[in-house]
Image 1 (cartoon, helix red, strand yellow):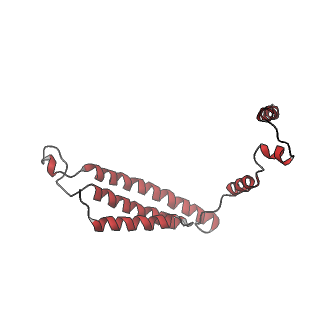
Image 2: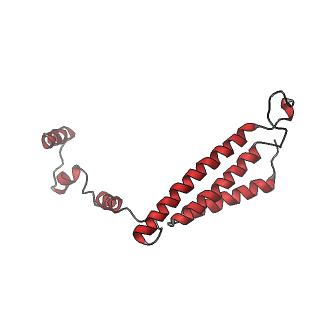
Image 3: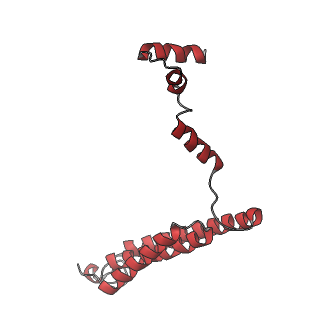
Length: 150
């Protein structure tokens, strides 16, 4: 199997640019990144499909001359999925613009609180006992947990 090096490099460049844009906070840039990356992946599908051949219609052409229809079907499916994803991200960006005046992804307040509790180890069951200087065996810890839940 041989592939076109120019198409492979172009697809790699598009995927790299798409990944870079997806890592941004702006939903508009994330959307552009998804579209660019999707086009790069579609291009790789077409390169992987091999050389162009006759239309894959049964009893019309010999099977050796037909092109592989699977990559074309995958690209069509990817285009439909990209359309749905684009519509969803545009709706999210529009709603974010209405609520906050920008389309940046905000930090999740609850996630930040959980991170702070985990860093301070205040959320675990062992924190209360450890802060009191009690080092109990596992059986006693389980009994205490059962008493707390009862």
